[in-house]
Image (cartoon, rainbow, N blue to C red; front, side, top):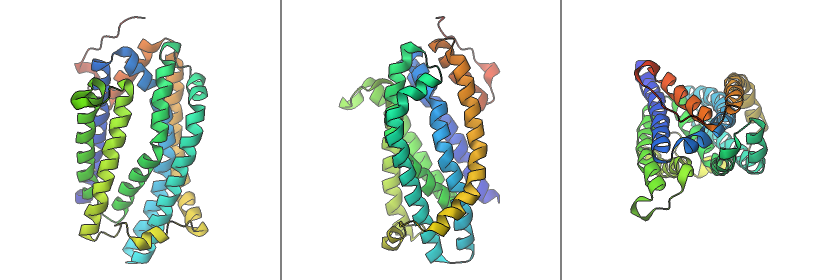
Length: 288
């Protein structure tokens, strides 16, 4: 159990550290307004990702059953259906989100001085959702066949690459475009895409049960029974995460009324609490 759980826990810690470092880069290199613009959208983004987390939970149960029964054909069929469903969901959310970015951010009371920047950040994030959903589903299903170390290795690679690219995109290192607050999400998308491509080849070389091949591509055609089974198991798990997301949206909605400085401060305190050491640091946010 420890052999499986330790890499999983390390992955969660690594993701938390990555988010905190990106927050530091944006806050230090752009300022309070940039940090506030990113923070205003994050609860909405987490809400959208929670749907895929629920779907991946249902898919993991089914793929674990198939793998335990040594039914490789069903493993690939479940994986193909899960990938197809999450890509379709990502495309639908990306299209709707790009049009609804402004109403969503206005609905949660995003301060006017950061509204436009938040809308731009939100649209980039929405466009990248199909890729992020696919990567999240892929690494989650790998754990369903008992492999928690490979996702950790590639999470380390994508995290390090993303942390290097974020300041590079903010400051325009090496001729890269200076894209301001969008640097955090763009660097994450680039790192995720690079990690996913290398992962494809790595799994093929290892002859992993979830290596992408022609047979799995054929199973991208959705099968009604499998999809219903995934949803039946995944929806309750997704609802739990959605409720947490809605609570965060409610909090940021109240905080937004006090201005962008309060929005940035709320984000910073949230990151410190996740690391369990808010008492160690002092945060200075310029008064409005």
